[in-house]
Structures are given as structure tokens and as C-alpha cells.
Length: 591
Ligand SMILES: Nc1ncnc2c1ncn2[C@@H]1O[C@H](COP(=O)(O)OP(=O)(O)OP(=O)(O)O)[C@@H](O)[C@H]1O
Ligand SMILES: [Mg+2]
Image (cartoon, rainbow, N blue to C red):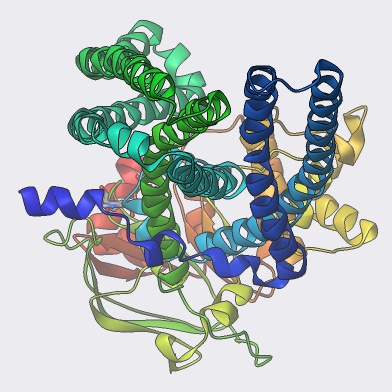
């Protein structure tokens, strides 16, 4: 256990800075900014030095009988130098900050783009294992940590290191004896900081995790707000959030004792040390072994050194967070993408077959959803798939789309095993009209154009006409520019479906996968959707998961999926005569 804790506390620099090669293209800005950073840090040491001289020297000079007029001239010179140094520092800092932001945000943007590009290409099971809210929150939080580290912590660390070591050198030059006296008191401070600090860090990490959990509740509630309201579950969600918040609060309160002790200890020890050192220094002054300028320098530099020492725990904990964030981001960047093979230009003709296809979801490996599916669909054929709810119809579509791979058996397109065909080719040959149409929160035009990015205005309108959508779209005051709302909530179910159909028309695929909505549309919308679908299916291979008898009857062939297999296949008439599962389904569910 202690070993593990040690491991988690130690900072692995290679891991922490594992993503900083993103700065390489901007090194012409970044490196000079880094130099400026060290320069301003070094210059900031002039401040306590000149200030000390300013405070201590008049007294010193008076004591040794220097002319007061000359003392005034001297202190004028010191303050002018001080102002000059401040001006240079301000000037350099201006360029440093601009350079850091410019190089840093450019690099971060490159990184954000790369991570997102990778994220959307990760295989489907990766997404299924995680809650959508969690992925979004982590994505934002981890990149936020990197941004904070790059733009704040690294400059802070460089500055504090220069001040710490520079200050230490100065106090030793001023008085080694006094320095040793002061340093003798440090081990106590370091010990307490190490022990209490570690506890505080652990608590604050736990508290952060719990806060993140509570934010997932917020995200889920907002995403599913319609369901929350429809079931009057506001109170339930409130309780869920409150209990997540209570966990957070409990942890925070547990940590508060240590934190409070830490703060009061620091106050006591800091001012205590200063008082004792001043007392000791005053004694040295009385003996004549220390001048007042030296003592003032000593005190001012000690405060600087102490303050920079005090900033290290924060810097370290930020670097630890960075290490975690970097590792998680690198995990995404290194994760294998679905299929990196580029699309070829040999189009598929639309013939498909399944051979003894066996499939279980990776999250439920012990339950086979498909347990030996066999079928063949000829190019241009229209096949209806029917089967009880949960039989695996939508799952079959996921497999055809290559979201998942079967564990046994195979799928083939145009007689070629699916794995030999780049997923890009397969998907560009297929268009899907899903069971639940979710649109993107843009305009209608954008949502239709999603089927073929860059499509012309005429093509979009033609597609909408074929999909029986043009009429209702034209009735909106904004027409094709009307916004559909998040996930398309501003449109009716039938309208959303027709937008999805228009999208498929525009994509002009060889293969069409239709997952008919189980929810009933009114007869007018249904007629419009049906007409649109009939138009869409012309000249394409279509597989329709059908819930309506009209759709089933219009198919060339019907396949019945039940118990993980295609149990029957034939025309409506043939299957009715067979008196099997289909007949049962047709009598109970489909009619
Ligand atoms: N992502 C998933 N992870 C694990 N199991 C899943 C997943 N998606 C679906 N299942 C399970 O697989 C089985 C088949 O689901 P599928 O969605 O294919 O049914 P379906 O035939 O389309 O039903 P319906 O007619 O109700 O749409 C179900 O038992 C379901 O619980
Ligand atoms: Mg389904």
C-alpha cells in the first residue's frame, strides 16, 4: 500500500510533459517567451534588494556621518534604478505573457483537435462502456487542466524556482551564520507540510472526483429533461444530486480540519520564524557583525524564499493533476481507431450475406444476441426483417454498419468478407434511417446536408421533395434555415423522420437500412413517410425492420428473426401458410 501511494504521489516528468511536443511548431515564440520568463523572475530579485538598500542605507550612512544631502541623492538614485528595473520587467512581462498565450493556445488547439478527431474515430464499444456525460466532462476537464498548467503553473514554477534559489544564494552571501540559524528551523516546517499536505491533497482529490460525479447527474438530468418532467421526477433528480453533493461535502469537511490546522500552523511558524530570526539578527547587529542594510536584505529575501517555498505544494499538486490528465488524453490518442484504412473507389453493389453469424455485446459477453444468423440479400432486393422486441434486429444493423464485429461467422458484401472491405467503403455504401431519429442542433438545411456534406442547395431541396419534407419545411417562416433545436426537439416525430429520409436520399446509397419507428404516426404522416420511403427504396438494396403490415407486404421477401436466428424466410403469403412465428407475429403485433 505505501508503495502504491508513493507511486501515485511521485511526479513522472516524462508522463507529465508527454504532450508538450505540441509546442514544437511554435517554439520560435515559446522559447523566447521562456527566456523572458526567467529574465523577469531574475529581475524580480532586484526588488527586495533595492528596497532593502533603500530602507537600510540612510540609517547606515547617518551613523557613519555622511552628509545628509548626499544620502538623499543616493536614495534618489536607488529609487530611480528600482523604477527602471520595474519598467524593464513590465515590458518583458508583457511580451512573455503574449508569447505564452499565443504559443500555448495554438498548441492546445492542435491538441484539442487531435483528441477530438481521435475520439470520434474510437470504436463503438469504447463509447458503450462510458456514460456520455462522463466522456464530455473528462474531455473538457483534462484539457482544461493542461491549459491551466501550461499558461499558469509552468510560468509560476519557473518564477518560484528562480526566486527560491536566487534568494537562497543572496541570504547566504549576506550572512551565512544567520542563514544556517534560519535553515535549522526549516525541517520542522517541511515535515508538517509533507504530512499534512499529503492528507489535504488526498482529500481534495477525492472531493474533486465526487464533485465531478455530481456534475454528471446535472448533465444527465439536463439531457433527459423531457423524461425527467414527464415522469415528474424532479424530486428524484434533486435527491440524486443532493446525495452526490452530500458525499462531496462530507469529504470536504473531513479535510477541513487538516486544512485549517495547516493554515494556522503556517501562520504561527512563518511569523514565529521571522520574529526569531529578527531577534537573532538584532543581536548580531548589536555585536556589530551585521549592518542594518544586511539585516533588511536578509529579512526581505527570506520572505521571498519562504513565499516561493510555500507555493511548491500547489504547483506539485497541479503537476500531479496534469500527469493524470496527460495520461488519460494520451490513452485516447493512442487508442486504436476503428479502421484507419482509407475508402477506395470500388463501390459496393449492394449484395449482402451472413454466414453463421454469432454475436454478443462486449458488455454482456455471456448472452448471445445473435446465435448463428444466415441470410443472403441480392443487390436491389427489398427485405423486411420482423421479430419480437429485443430479438436483435437493431443489433443486426449495427453489425452491418461495422459498429461491432461478430465473434463467430462472417458478413459478406458482394461476396467479399466484410473485414476485407474498409469500413469507410462499407459505410459510404449504406444510409440509415434509424428507429429514433436524433438530429443535430442546427438548421434543417444543415441536417439534410449531413448526408452529403457540401451538397448544393438544389440537391438539398430535391432530396427534401422526394422525402415529402419540402412542404412542411416551406411553411416555416425561416424555411430551410429553421433551427431544429437540440436533437431536433422542435420537429414532430414524423417530420424528423422525413428529414432523416431526405438525408438518406441525398447520400444516394447502394444499401438502405430502415429501422421503422415503433411509435405510431397518425395516418396522414404515416402515408407521407411511407411514400417517401417507397421513393427512397427504388433501385437500392433495402433492409427494413418493419413493424407495420403495409411495409412488410410491400417487401420482396420477409425474414423472421427470433431466438438469435433467421427462423423463417419467404413472402407474406408463404409465411402465413407456414403457420409459424410470422403468422403469430402478424396476428398479434403487426396488425
Ligand atoms: N449496447 C448494448 N449492450 C448490451 N446489450 C445490448 C445493447 N444494445 C442492445 N442490447 C441487447 O441486445 C438485445 C437485442 O437488442 P436490439 O436493440 O437489437 O433489439 P430489437 O430487435 O431491435 O428490438 P426492438 O424491436 O424493440 O427495437 C436486447 O436483449 C438488448 O437488451
Ligand atoms: Mg430496435
